[in-house]
Length: 213
Image (cartoon, rainbow, N blue to C red):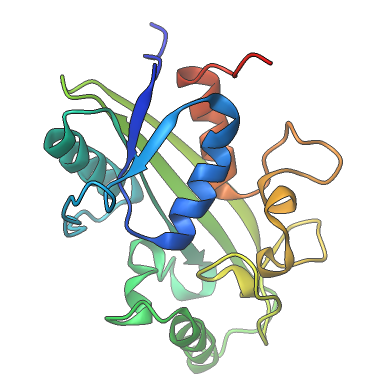
């Protein structure tokens, strides 16, 4: 059975400014009218699930129910092999109440040292995407990118753990990349690089129509 298409308006179920900016960049070429949960005054549900997929679905369902529109949510995070997959679904929470990712990065480095881990610090980003329609229909997608962590952090672009993540085969961290570089492999805009872009590429192929020019 083919995936259901998104026809016009879509709620992005996020209050994270950096994430909203990236998602709108990805949605831009597809002619979808995207409005954020924050712009609609929707509350941000507590992320109580233990998987990326579960949290993405939880957020999308809450936004779709509250807005009576199709809602799109993602849950993503950094998984560090030497930390047994942490911070994982708790990636944002490692930054404390104010989501201070400088503090979160410092905690990752501290815990690696406390465990006696030695570089290369293998890690990967995971992104789970979910779209939920008001009638309960669900479409889900996932993307992953592997790499290693480097310290000290490099770059001020992106957000979250981007300045310490060096994707395999490249010499720039996500924090040093412009949006176009992070969303696609250099020289080939059809191939997604970041975990979010890879998940979104799968979603776009299934649920979105390219805008005709």
